[in-house]
Amino acid sequence: MNDISIGRKRVGEGHPCFIIAEAGSNHDRKLEQAYRLINIAKESGADAVKFQTYTAECLYSKKTPKPEYLKKKGLSSKDESLWDVIKRIEMPREWHAKLKDYCSKNDIIFMSTPFDLRAVDELEEVGMLAYKIASFEITHLPLLEKAGNTGKPIILSTGMADLSDIKIALKIIYNAGNHKVALLHCAVNYPPKYEDLNLRAMDTMRQAFKVPVGFSDHTLGIISAIAAVARGACIIEKHFTIDRKLKGPDHSFALEPDEFKEMVRAIRDTEKSLGSAAKKRSPSEEELYLIGRRSLVAGCNISKGTKITREMIEVKRPGYGIQVKEMDKLIGKIAKADIEEDDILKWDMF
Image 1 (tube, helix red, strand yellow):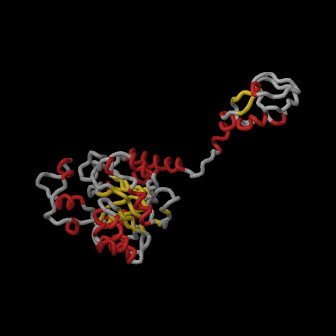
Image 2 (image 1 turned 120 degrees about the vertical axis):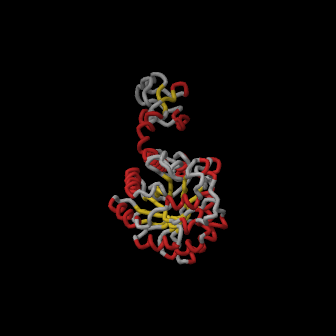
Image 3 (image 1 turned 30 degrees about the horizontal axis):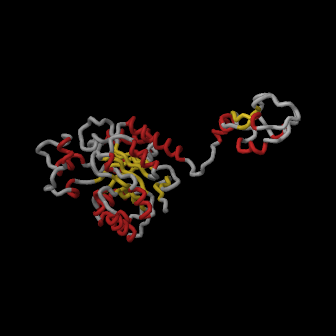
């Protein structure tokens, strides 16, 4: 399975999970708020912070119906169309260089998802290290080709896609001469139900396409991201916000700063817990291995010259005497010296 490199970070099996703090539109078109989001992402321990580059004109027809979740959550006014919502939250393109510079100063990777061809050109100008393509864009083949032609690593979300969709998308990117691809499993809803996540699909994708596989998580909590890492996710992408009570379509299902920080900590602890596939005792278990396991001890006072019988032996802790599995070898041996009750039996006594 091929790894990919994003800046100094190696992404793939055997490397630390690459964690993307998804700011999305949670800047609310306030540059200082975008800077604050970058600070939160850095303080949380994320590897990258990601925004989104789109315009309403290039994203939606003005005749596109508004999704139910925007209506139910009151995230748009009654008379506001979906096109109007997108126009209201789109990120000013002149921010790219400012956000990239701010990320560089804070030693965190800047990313922004392009949603149109011009966005790729503009992001190239500021030196993007990798491109994340959203699930909705997996059928935007010209965008995939454009991003593939940059030669930069491509992280492709696959929400709503089946294997044939992924195969077509990968073919476009590969035909552009770019094989630096990772896939993200994703359940597209805001938020999705746990029963719709199907994290086992990551195994299928990994086996089918032989590329690093991760998880883009839209759930309200952190358990799904942790479960995905335990199942081998090489990348976790998760929305975060300053405050879920802020207005805007991405705030309500995003993690707040302390929650995001806790997710990163839990992911790192999960990685440590996974450890090695070898089944053996660890150095930290050595003391209790010797004290807590059982071995053979004298069940009574045994005089020098006595022939050992089963009745003279007890199985007790600690574990550094003659091993229990060797009891039959001990029976019939002759004691070289007096042995007191509860003495730990060793071969040099016989």
